[in-house]
Amino acid sequence: MLSDNVMLGFPDFWIFAGYSLTVIAAIFCIVYGIINWHKGVEEKDGDYREEIKWEKEEIELIEKLP
Image (tube, rainbow, N blue to C red; front, side, top):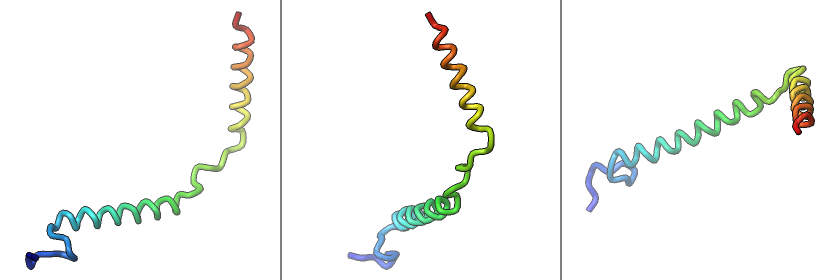
């Protein structure tokens, strides 16, 4: 028995809302990923120099251990 309140074959509004919000969230995530694909990837000048300095200090500290 089908009732007259069936929306696109879903017997309850909340089931329809759940499926709809899932599709909307997936589309939003895809669009957000495409827009922010390469943001934050670029390194600034000098970033690697500081890391090299820390690595050298760490090696010196390890060599000083008994």
